[in-house]
Length: 212
Image (tube, rainbow, N blue to C red):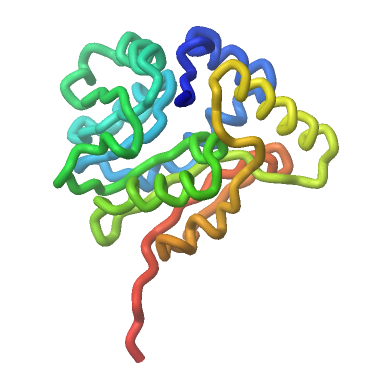
């Protein structure tokens, strides 16, 4: 049975704030300045769209393909979007297999998405979302990371059990992010840590072959 956040969509943001404060939202915001003011953005797993209005307020020429597998999440994001930005966003209920074909992107985001996937699926996801990036396109990434803090280990353990029940996610542990990034030959160009490294925001770019 595929995962679905429909059952908890209406209180997802409140729950995230209760547990993590503004840290998850700040991790999403950390590198938004890498996104160009015009062009096309692929926003994967956009959830409730809680950064869309902020993002578009300074990017009147940016077009966004917003993709999320939860119909209710997409509905909430559509309702939250200010009317003057509605011509800039194309909402799609789906996953990485529903990325519009033959569309080139200047940047892609995946915020707190890959942690829900098993390793193989995560690698397939990363390949799919970066395949249509332009040569200099950026991948903005934010997610949870393992730390040595026992409280954070406990929160992560509980989070997986909670979402396996409520959203039917397949994963039960964090995937190997380095393996994912290396599999598509991308490299890290910026990073920022929150909550002692439990939450991290990163920017990746395709590796370039340098001829000597």
